[in-house]
Length: 420
Ligand SMILES: Nc1nc2c(c(=O)[nH]1)N[C@H]1C(S)=C(S)[C@@H](COP(=O)(O)O)O[C@H]1N2
Ligand SMILES: [Mo]
Image (tube, rainbow, N blue to C red; front, side, top):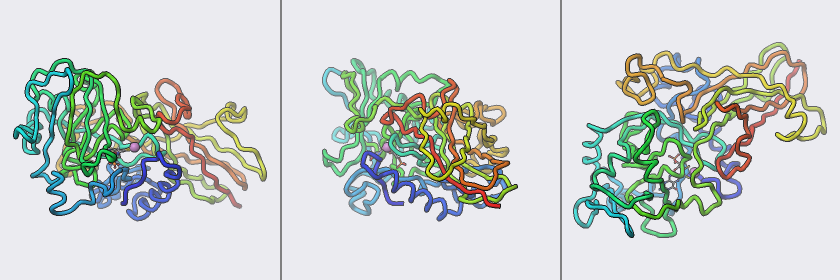
């Protein structure tokens, strides 16, 4: 899939709509999913049919949001070696700036930069893995969901010795050595070093869905910030700088985005047939992301539309008094062995009970869940269906953030007709 704009340009969502539908059709996945099923789950359709949505997206089927000219994952051969984007040539530098004190900087010049085998070695003692959906702050669809393996960033920073006078950490990846193409992101020192043990940590990922992280998804190594939108998850990671400056200096802040915005709870419609028959339930399907505020339920509102009827929005009286009905959310897969990469036990995945192998929470935090609404009892006519999430604080979409530059949150609507 070719990269798309990250939505800071005007017509990105239109282009995305076309891409995701084509992608879903091209992959032949379970009807109506925007998220592609991995090859191995396609081979076991019986375990997938009860699910409205596949758990893992194959690495190539993610919607690709990448800046750069050329985009780093288009490099080949010598150019790739020169860019240090092969497993053998990849290096990570960790340095300090200003008053930050970094006793053991990791640099290419001094021969101390971290290489991939060093990172893999660190993973032997400090590695972990978890499921997480990727979502762009500016695109109203999840980009995909993966099983990511790697090492918490805090363990990597320890390699630089007893660092001091550090309040923030910023980082970037390969960008054709062109300052104009820099895509940088940042975190506070506290966010990196003191993740709650129940939360997924800031992370360096080098495997996805049981395989080495491919170049197309930011390999050999990318940053992965579980609680955040995609712009914190820098691909082709090569540089980390420790600073005493406390301010966020993310490239994404330049486009009026909230740089501290975290992954949001939202529902998306992935399939709604344009026409249905009286007497048979009209099946509407979708996915929802469980963001930082969790997901209580997904609900739909079906509205009869007459010719020339006025638009409604979330401030309209009709909307405010509308009757929303809860949808059926997919249960956790009964057999995680069919869902996870071959040979991986769910007992070893963060967020799962190591004794039973079942998820401790459902939906899993920062992951997607499929949902289905079976709409019944409609008379012939034209209808609109809307879907919204309700988070664990009781907020229904588009609340609590009508301000979209902290994460798109429109309530999706589809039209359909019921015929006799
Ligand atoms: N180096 C680099 N990393 C990047 C980007 C980029 O353009 N360059 N885009 C970011 C944005 S805005 C998003 S939404 C995610 C998308 O990740 P994906 O392409 O794996 O779906 O990557 C992030 N990491
Ligand atoms: Mo993004």
